[in-house]
Image 1 (cartoon, helix red, strand yellow):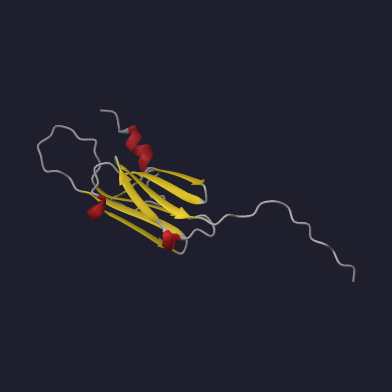
Image 2 (cartoon, rainbow, N blue to C red):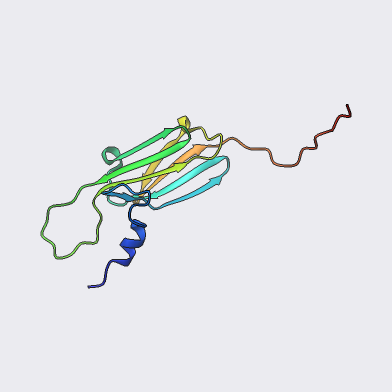
Amino acid sequence: MLPDLFGWIEGGIPGLHQTPGVHGIRVEERIEDGQYILRAELPGIDPAKDVEITVAEGVLTLRAERSEEKTERHQSEFRYGTFARAVRLPAGARGEEATAEYKDGVLTITVPVPETKTGTRTIPVRHA
């Protein structure tokens, strides 16, 4: 049999920023209308009891657990166990005001981000 190439790619290079037995979580990130939005693929998870979201020192950490069903099967490509992902929030993000919603296997976390002023400021030089 050929090795599971996709599983190897998803797992990354062995020993590089990975915790044994912990799987990664696929995410999408964007900033829209003053909100940082993170969407995470978590199918088959009960968000009320299997998901933990924390924010500390500007880092959002997402952990989930998927339990294996005990049935006879010939082959399974499902992943069971602990899933985790940590992302650095944008500067000024208000993690204490974060909200989360789970729908159709996707967890969406929204964090308010203050508007940043863009543009150029001219600094006058004083002659001493």
